[in-house]
Image 1: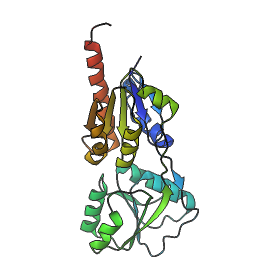
Image 2 (image 1 turned 90 degrees about the horizontal axis):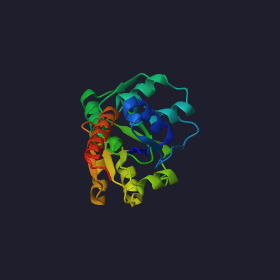
Image 3 (image 1 turned 120 degrees about the vertical axis):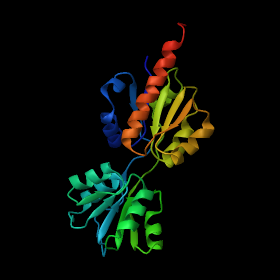
Image 4 (image 1 turned 90 degrees about the vertical axis):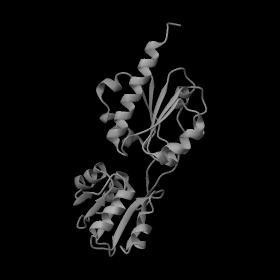
Length: 243
């Protein structure tokens, strides 16, 4: 039996993330995808109004907006190279301005692109991007283009959490971390890997075997952390005497 790697992002995002894992990592785990949220578009059409630039803080927003409008005239400013690449693939002139909402805000206030700007986001966002930019004199509106309803862990995930093998769980947002922590009540050894300290906070009181934080808030660092975690589990398991 092998350790379990439990991915909890929406199915498409989890599959993309799994494709970034080294083959030797995938070969040493049992992969379970059990989304804790799903993505539901909130708009069927979209008018950018007076905006002179778009803000995307997730690739989900890019995909939803690309599906409801053919307008690609405005520049877009994005959190993360992955989101920017998704926007470019959809036809926008997209710029990656940092890996976090804080870095995006700082870059926009430094560069001062022509406004007003429009932040296209999910219903649940972090960083107060539009409010902070407005307060600093850069007019920015915000429109939620998708919902993120919570979902329970599926049967396969629940079985893993009451099983005997360690479960590695990468988590990417405080909201999904809280939701996972509420459901992870089984005796399995859980090794949680958080994208940031804010994601780690709701996990710490649970008494999991480990709660590690990625060295950078990006997918590459999460992949590195998973590989390191798996190596540590393998060393511990290999050091145990036969039962």
